[in-house]
Length: 318
Image 1 (cartoon, rainbow, N blue to C red):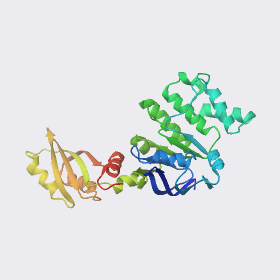
Image 2: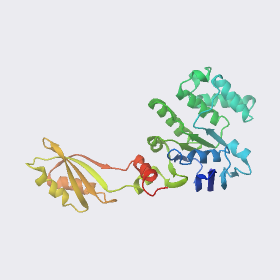
Image 3: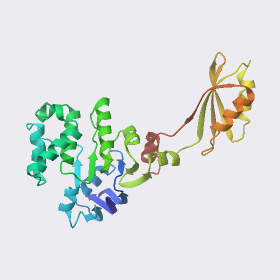
Image 4: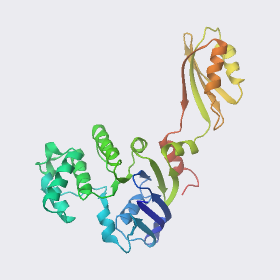
């Protein structure tokens, strides 16, 4: 197990930023750690990386306790904070050399690690430029390079795509996925589409409590409401409301049907069923039996954004 968190609690005065949470992160896993502002995710990450002490609970990284072996823990973690701290008057190579020396990397290994980070993070074209001259995207790449310069087993990335444009986000996403093949990655972000595209598993924290833990597909499945299937049918009928609508409504498991209008012989419907009832196969067979041409059929799925909103904004959620 790369990270083991048990009964972790952190207080700021009388406010519980993190309230008795426990979770594990497996070796080689990319974990999305999500929550609204003030939920406790950054506090948790700072505790795991030994920047903050907890009030209660334990954390182990690669088998080492943050309380008893913080030096060993720090050596095994690469950390990119939300506010990427860089020395803007250094050029990229100078900064990477400085970062490597902080971890005790010397001589030929230092040059080897610098060269590898320049290649992995795509910094070849800017390696001699001052960091202050770089775009936000390249600065994030430099931050990732310093987080990985000592070849840590675990990467903790807090909002790594914050403030980037869409092209830069795709570049950083691809880099994180590449890193995830060899590293354990804990990734915090507000961009939920990034989580869906990048992460193997998701933990959602709200008001200091873990409110969900599972793969993106599992969370969408667990929090899905009534099923909805959109249909586009081509049928030579005089009146769709009397010739198609009742036949769809009478199908087993169908709760309700909405008519979405027509365009010539093309008719649109939305079919509603109870959660867990997938009627697409029956709808296809019905279209065949009735000699309707099925132009399109799509099942509406609950988005990760909807799950996040339900868990962090719904009544009674912590």
